[in-house]
Amino acid sequence: MGFDKFGGVSFTSEAKVADFVSYLEQGKVMASSCKKCRRVYFPPRVDCSNCLTSDVKWFEIGSKGKLLTYTRVNYGPAGFEDDAPYVLAVADFEGGVRVFGRLSREINENDIKVGMALKPIVANLPDEKVLYEFAAA
Amino acid sequence: MREVAVVGVGMTRFGVSENTNVEMFSEAAMEAINESNLEPKDIEALFFGNVFGSHEEGQANMAPFAVADIGVPNIPATRFEGACASGSVAVRDAFIWVASGYYDIVLAGGTERVLAMDTPAATRAFAMCSNSYYEGPAGITFPGVFAMLAHLYSHKYAIPLPKLKEQMAMVAIKNHHNGKLNPKAHFQATIRDLMEARIARATQRGQPVPTWADEMEFFRDIKVNPMIADPLQLYDCCPFTDGAAALVLASIDKARALTDKPVLVAGVGQCSAGSLADQKDYTQMKSRILSAKQAYTQAGIEPPDVDLCELHDCFTIAEIVAMECLGFFEFGQGSRAVARGETEIGGKIAINPSGGLKAVGHPIGATGARQIYEVVKQLRGECGERQVAGATIGMTDTLGGDAGTICNIILRRGW
Image (cartoon, rainbow over all chains, first blue to last red; front, top):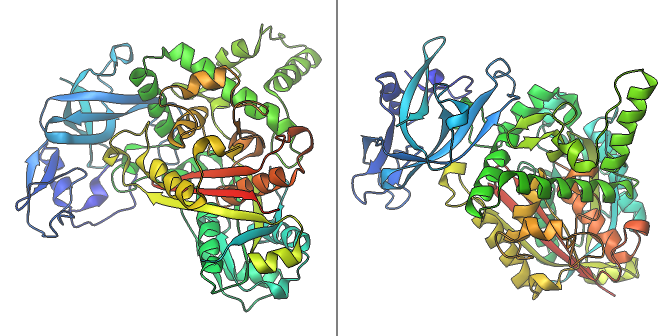
């Protein structure tokens, strides 16, 4: 299983970090950290650019996140036309993990506020695809 | 390093083109070569910006076709790609090779036929310049990236969004005003002109005639100014545009023999950044701050020395943030400076006297060279009604991706 299952439209079929998508299929949104120097990576990496080793462990992104910024996209790119409108966001999680992603459609638009508490969740898309999103915490 | 000067510039009329990418580039290149009092055989190499030729026309490896089209099929011709900053990145490398002494006279620039793609396809193609592994699959768009920047700016500097949106609208009003004075611009009309055209059309067709009290009311009207990605509306966004721009760079000794008005490349900078979420604070883009610092240091100047700047206003909020990162205004003060008119022609610093990406248009492979075209014309005093009086130092700023590539070039009069 590779990256072909990640997101609405993706051109990437395989990746060294394919475990990220396998974890999503298990309902877990994961980041990686270097076992040697403990640097944290999201998007996850399996090669550490800090100490140049390739021994990482995976850990689940915590449920204490904060909304940094967001936008409601009314016009999507090719492949997303019928998906729009949707809300894109950047959120900060514990341990300095900053994540770009979608805000769950479960959140009422009037309730969206910078600084609101968020947690990562996995959304199941058509064709057995998966995407991480942010839900209200 | 040797001193290097721009000896000639050229650009197509930006807008909707029925010409190919290569035809557009040839037109701009021939203008630049003619202006330089040179012939194509004098050009030693081409540094060529183009991003989406493969998508637009099914044409990859375009640079060799471009030199063949101007009659020098055997000189080295290399494509440079740095998303929307491709043209600038090409010019910066051209500068370095001439400064190093490897070449004496080179051609640099770029071309892009964006409108060969429809809007969803172009939106998708542009979005490929962000992180396609993680951001693309969520449906990222560039209006979306800069819309998030607008919310962040509003929150960070405690400027209520309706107030910030008015200040952003003033960026568009200014740039359309300047664009009206630029015969090469895609949109040569003020926002007021666009309003009056809509009123005239409605009257002619017997439809309900809009009654906007002023430009701000027009901006707030989502029927004519639809919300693209909240809070950015249509007129906060630069258009999709076709066009090409080119310039000839020469070592200073060659340049002085060719022209009385060589425009010196005084300093250049280029920096990179990773994914959007890797950036600590994208209201203060580190790649831009560092790139500008390289250019200022090399030129031996400070931001207040700059008379005019052609910067990357792909969206109205982008102009405000760029002005701050380049050091023209304190962080958090840019939007107020726009509202006070400090960035108009004749203000503290003229920002985008050409009309910017907003009014001139944004053929992404060409934009950086187009910005240099404007600065060169301004320094030579050839800009007519949009002339910045007495301009001696000008600067360009081009952003690719979500600040993934930034390039700055400082030019000064060489006479």
